[in-house]
Length: 474
View 1 (cartoon, rainbow, N blue to C red):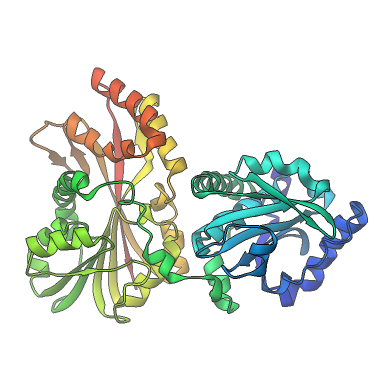
View 2 (view 1 turned 45 degrees about the horizontal axis):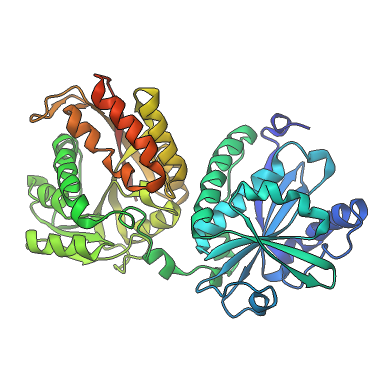
């Protein structure tokens, strides 16, 4: 059977163990015991508290995988000689599939989903797999996802080989898993169910630690504030130039009203739009995860309220805001669904969520430059193409899609006089390249960046990318 044969015929589900215990054990028994002669992999004392994922074909469970989550003081950390984690460990196990479905990439799809989802929702310190002698031949496959051999431990069932990720390889594996999820989801034409919603519904949120998300700052971690401030300032002014007519043409709630800029950075964009006549009677607040950004904003724009805060857990009252802006933020999030959930909570009924983000999938240019863009998107922990799927994610959080607008940014303008012509924003070549300068901050991107930059400035090549504006209502 091939993957294409399962198109529109497969349903992927997170499984409540109590409800699905019998079919999970039946599948394991069929494969591990009846077909492979292994009698100790059918059941585990930890199954009840594990996270289970399954694939159904014609109503039958045909493929499954589970993840055991270990807390820092779990005895297994000592038993298996693991580095004691500060947070949690994700242990993927009992990947099982009926023989007639092998080769169709269904098991690979489940593995990619659970690896990606566990990382996004639980943020474990490291991920691991364990293989007994019978399955050690799979070690090379797992190594392509960043799992390296750690050591072996003796058990009642023989030698158990332990493979684990480290801080660097975990991102390599997750990036590959994300790519596989997008590819295989398209092939099978089936949706990937959100893990957070399942954990919440099944009262398994002990695995979820909001404090981990409060520390998430994919954008600034590798970049110094001092180095980024000039680029962010230029970006904010550029954003205002082409967003001003869009904002002025949009109907917003009549003041007095409350407006929040989530991920406000140094506050320049919010300060500029707060002076527009339609926001005259608005109370404006800016929130950013970076204390440095907020400190700069407080010193520069004293009439606006500034707060250090997190998009996943703002600390603001429910239904307290009429308008929420968010510019160039969603692409930097590991878990945009959780952010949308919080934004929906704090937005008033009838309020508007106005989001602006670049969409790397719209980039056009020479293959050397396009390769740099796509390579960065592959290794980046966030989603540089998030605007393609945001309407679907927002709908699941009960947002109503209002409209989408696009602005084409291209390098055909004058250096000192950016020009807006309809939905085209023309920048000079130097200013256009500055949009992508942050890519050079990643060590693994330096060779790609250098090659692309050299080609760009030695030629008159044209490049362009779209910045998309999406507006939602509650």
